[in-house]
Length: 332
Image (cartoon, rainbow, N blue to C red; front, side, top):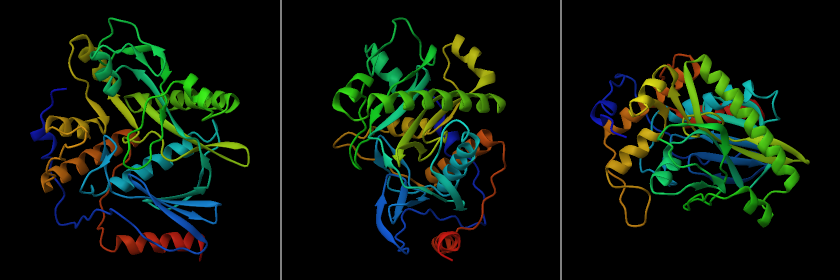
């Protein structure tokens, strides 16, 4: 999509507040069994009962962690996820128990299912790129000829992916293959499908109240004591794509790019600079202007998705603040 990235990455950045990016934590808590550094989150296992999830400022695209963190990003993702976990707890159980710090969620330690449930309401992003190249099937679901970029599906479709280990790419997989490989039982998969569609409907309703369209998103689920929980993040700009509702019909009719709220602008910037996560490709230089521009875009995403004003605070002593808040919540 053609967008003016000179404007995008040179938005004004608030001066006189020192903004550092939190790219890694290495705490040691009582009864801690292990620490997992994911693409974005640092996850502490407390005695196999609790997980402490620190949402860092790391940013990934094409399953690659980029070399610089984005100030404010971790707080933005965590606060959006907390908001939507609270707003959907009547649909299905979720893992959240507390959020002792703006960058932290504490919750139930579940055994995660080895698939991610992607639900798409519109043909865009990687699905459109594959469609444009002649592919008429996504995860075993037939897609008709003659569709246009950003066109709405008659009904949302679920296009699962495998959950790749760090450094590897998630892969599309069909429902039939999931069941054939025994990755998820037929009974559990039916529950995952039901929760996925209901969560997507709720997310779409909330987005509509904000003048947005929830285009696509992903959900992750886990199991604890034979009970299925929604885990990880939900409806954040890293896991979801939003369009502005008031511009959708006109832009679609005129074959114009949609104004969207998602991480897609980062992927597009990388692609324009020759990077798609393939072997031998180099991540383009992330200058301070690029980093600050991405940070401001995340703030825009937060404010539009939640309707709340985001206030920047000094990040001096950030590591210590997070550890203190976790210890006050859990360990006194």
